[in-house]
Amino acid sequence: MKAEQLKKDVTAKLNEELVWLDVREAPFDVYGLYDYKRDDYFRRLPDDVAAATSKDVAGLYKNTAGGRVRFSTDSDIIAIKAVYNDDTWVMPNMPLSGSAGFDMYRDLPTGSVYDGSFIPDKHVGENHGYEAQLTEDGKMCSYTICFPLYHNVIALYVGLKPNAEIRGGKKYKYDKPVLFYGSSITQGASASKPGNSYEAMASRAVDFDYINLGFSGACKAEPAIRDYICAQDMSIFVYDYDHNSPTPQYLVDTHAEFFKAFRSSHPTTPVIFMTRPDFDGRNEHDNTLRRNTVYTTFIEAFKGGDENVYFIDGERMYEGDMRDACSGDGTHPNDLGMYRMANTLIPVFRKIFAKLYDEQI
Image 1 (cartoon, one colour):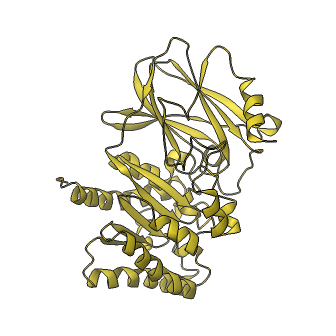
Image 2 (cartoon, one colour):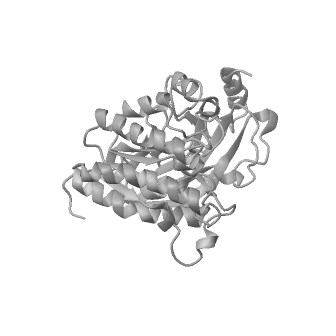
């Protein structure tokens, strides 16, 4: 069924007691999604870039990982109606609340705090969407709704009380986005809700916008995606794809090359090199080869006089008590793993932004 027909079918069934607004329209502010006002679906890349990168990326780029919508309202009911282009499906290593659900945060002067989740039933089926709502106190407040980490959302409507006021949302302190490029871990597997991806946690802590270009099993530094990233405007580039490199040699052949291409277009943009966090002893030799390749790209740049490169050793991310509780399947971080990843990155982000904006930490 075409997207426009799906939207018509869904909107015909909306709760008539609420006023329903399309998040593509003002005063809503949408972050983390590409050219969202022109298309009849949400996506993270241009169609031609996704198709030219790989068949796998072409199957994932419409997943809405990292998408957010911000607004302010005094409505004591906030509802959503999400429209998908197919049925929801359950992932073996991730709850539906994270893969297909939305969550919402109250953006307060002291920071953003979790307010609740909008979780679909196991199957949205022939309805191609679902409706859910949260009860609020009726005081004017700014909110952020995070899109699902997986699944293709083609429309999102917010329902408010008819007499409610609606305004634009809180602006990020650092509006030029951080761009994350990586594997399924970057995309968000296996966070229990969208706001528990490590990027979302770090964003709330430091107050920066971001773009999530994580593609499960499909992040391989192909020329099309490399050239696209090199053409983007960003505050920081988080470079993390060793997990999806088919072999250690493939990483050797592509990692430094990608970085050099990026430096040609972004001579001073800070780059954070990361390695995968799931060091468990089963692939110690492979892990070491991959980490050494990433570290070599970093250290050669640093010794060459590049002062805007940073290295994060993935083996350190889960450090501390309950290290073995940081993943539910031995690979993808659960909420504890995501939290520890975020906590590793947050001081680095603060240091970089302080340098970029001449601030005191």
